[in-house]
Amino acid sequence: MKYLRNVATLKLDAERCIGCGVCSTVCPHAVFDIIGKKARIVDKDSCMECGACARNCPACAITVKSGVGCAAGIIAGMLRGTEPACDEGCCG
Figure 1 (tube, one colour):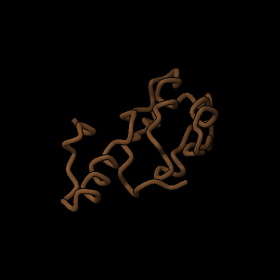
Figure 2: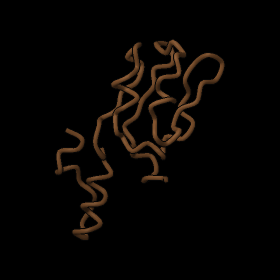
Figure 3: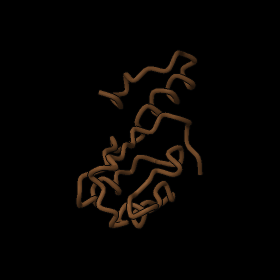
Figure 4: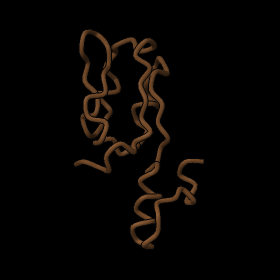
């Protein structure tokens, strides 16, 4: 399942990654892969921002704002017929 393009708050610090593979194991949408003994984000738009990867990363190499991130603002704007706004508290 793909979510909105380029809105996921997911970030990976490749230098901190120890290549354990936990992120790819716990991710329900195959966002990560282990390439050359390091994690890589291979499908960021599939990230649902559940936060399982960040909570389980032993090297603290992953950050993500758990929840729906800016998608909440975009969807709320679509439903209201207004410009997207993060007044839902998703980005603050």
